[in-house]
Length: 408
Image 1: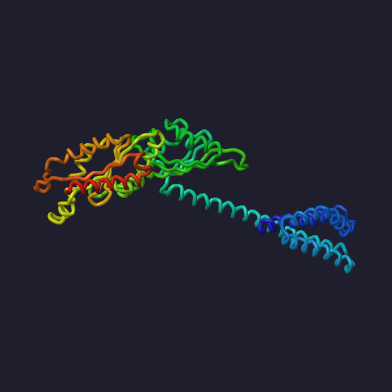
Image 2: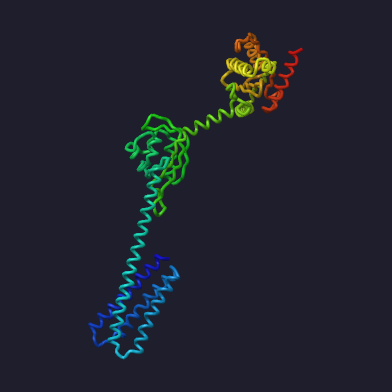
């Protein structure tokens, strides 16, 4: 609203100024002509211009129309009143012309001042915004970089230089499309084509020797008319440490803290994939359930620390006979479960025999000679169970039956 009012003041003030000056010139050039006749002629000739001006302001803003319209109304009526009551038109019209010049000049100058003050205000606001962006750009903890439509980096901040592990001089002018990593180049190409992209993965810099994991967001930058992409802006963050901590937390959530092998959660996550492959390719796989006999008694006699050492020694011996594809987990307490991919009943029994063979000889734990006895149950997919829960339930039941038989 302020912008339109200033432009209106400037235009209207200029019109009054031109009217007054023109009238004086005509009075000097044509002394026999009444200045009121001249003013009427100018006034009539200006009606069309004023009408367009009024219409323009009606479209733009109605409050500005009121101020301009009121000024025009007062100006026209002042001329009519003077024309009706004065007997000496030359003196009074000259005086009126002088007033018009002063008023018009004042309005004109005021309009110029207001107009350019607005321009200066806008320029200052732009400069302030640019300064804010510069501070954010330079001090941001995430890497920010600009690239043109050819994929060439044109600007970057200190965080970007630090994340990449290079130098500002090497990065400016670097063409991202020439990088060896095709995944990154494909993302930049898509951004240049006008599509925002997200990237997460390992980054192998061509200008440094380290490998990092980065997460980035790339957005296209369009021309002022919005018809073409002139480049893009990228924001990247080094998430190597975060990924490392996430992996540690995942490992902790899926592994038994005492023995280091998988817990129930980790076992079920991995064995689901074995079940899917066995269904797809019509393959067997076996589940072996193991219980350490009389483990509670060992804990009661020798203490929990001794019992923990027994569990660690047991896992060490079982791991020595496992294949890389086998999945070994602590199911709870002194009970363990093993999944054997592509293994039928015969293969599962041979594997169980190898485990029993490992524990035939006594082991030395905390200077105590101990023979570890095991009870084992076996279930094989798909004949004895279609799901992991069914296979574990059946193998657990058979393990318990074997324990009962061995105690007789």
